Length: 414
Image (cartoon, rainbow, N blue to C red; front, top):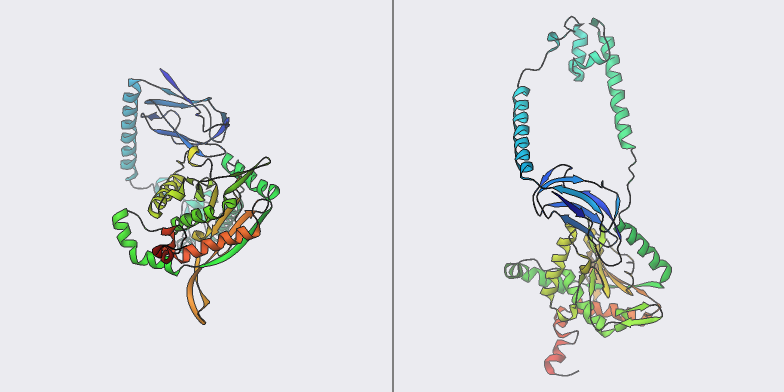
């Protein structure tokens, strides 16, 4: 009985995928629910699993394009295959064991070959030992019955030249492979942003002292109770949610000739994956606390690294945050993630001298950047938005009160 393996639909409007990697070998016996292949679309990488047990016959090689619904493999179901596979595996093990046993036999010496009458002069033999040349190797270069020192030196030069040529050849190889649909789509979108938006970037700097103090004081207790470390991204995500509510234009998009504004915050978090940059989404961040946001970010990051993000986890998004600081970036101009209108860029934290109350002190500082579409976001809004992020991060307690002054909140005044 043959069971067909079909290309599943990765999502609406996607008609083709690339077979990026087979996770099993052709004619291999596989069990039910075994991951058998990875497929790439322009939105995500998906894993195909087997619905049955049996011997798989691969019909489409890696790197080929296949339409959604196409048969890419067949699985031959039979109990006999299970028994045959077990028998074959046992035969292979026996063969390997025999090979190991035979490898323990003494190596065939030069004296036991047809070249037993070849003689080396004492000086030639000395040079061979000094240069570390196997005596059998010289038979590939010369067939005299007696080999002297001069001949050995010439052979050594030829061996060195061959080794050099081999290294040079290896170092100048050129590899070509098709770009994945994900990479192609990313390239297309990034170029379109430059051509179709009026993108500008504004910068500011944030004193990270108070936030880092929270991490230092409470991280171990937090980890013991919650199960993971305190992360910086969750604080910036919460701060962005508050700022987006304060400046709704930043949380808007242009569609045709209409301006679409959202009363919720679905924040895309840029994450590196084996297939390239992906932006899974933490939804309704305006309703979630720091721990809930951090937990979702960590789960999405793990899925991204394992190529297990679903289309639904990346569709949508009203604003994006990218943290180049994890790679050591000091400053950058992040590119807007279309059709969104703005993106926040975080960078690395460096101790720098700053002026504080008339004194020069050393503080852990981070540059932040906001790239925005000037067609719908004015300069005042962008600068004020980024300034709000700065104020919230420099006073983390205000995150509890949606950006309001905690002391005014305590006194019930505006």
